[in-house]
Image 1 (cartoon, rainbow, N blue to C red):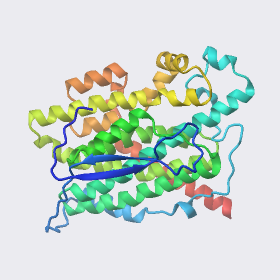
Image 2: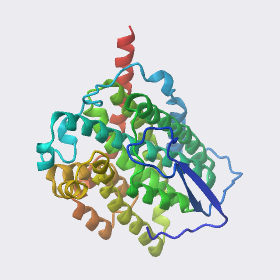
Image 3: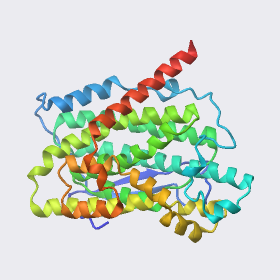
Image 4: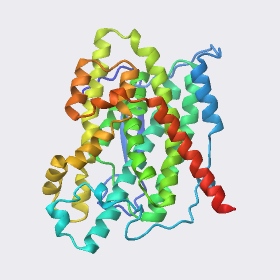
Length: 368
């Protein structure tokens, strides 16, 4: 990424991966990396009530706190043949000559690894969000935004707990962070400007994560995995709304050069996120021909449609915050995702909350 660090001072952030005791599918030389950055802390003595919409999000953030140890029924088991119970068509190489040559045992192994790979990236992204929400508390100028970001920090810690427990207890398998996600986190965490943290994490990374979570929430027939993703998405709906609100107010005041820099970031980050699902590490781990698998994924209509769907939350948010200029539109059009510019994001986020409430009703019914 070509972004400049716009801050002063010095701050090094350690981002851990997992304990070496965790069962990684691939060798992991390092279980943490250090991201340098020049972050300043902003204090303000104006405690005025401020923006009504932001205050409403803060109230919702306080009211919707939950305990991952209690809200989720961890006694449920996963099917060893298909842990998440997803249709095989979501496997990126489904229908390829490679897939057709595989026997039943090899397909079972690939299902487990593919699902663990995806959940691992969810986990690593949530730790990135935890670090970024702590940064927002430090950097953002107004006290209401600091307060909401504090509720987000505990949300993200809970998400790390839930995905870590799911992988550790139910899969006994995990993958290191994929290089495109790591590159984007490096850029977002090291930049000292609060709006770039919002744009990189709240809008782009979490926007794509919501769409990826949705697959596991809506199409997974295992109730444990579906519930974990539904509850995480309930929180993330608030986070995306928070970032959209803050940037929608801030970006109209940017000069042309500053706006162009944010658009450059959106373009570069979108390509990184689009490439995130090539799953190159996965093919290596299960002993499949890496280049042949990647070539199929790059040309597969179903996989390209899936990768495009991942931008269903990002594109309307970019529209709402005022960054959907001609260059960004051209990028999204080339990726086949510009159609989402007409989406009603508020209705989508409200539906995320309704589905989470539905999982609560299901669990309460099962307990009676």
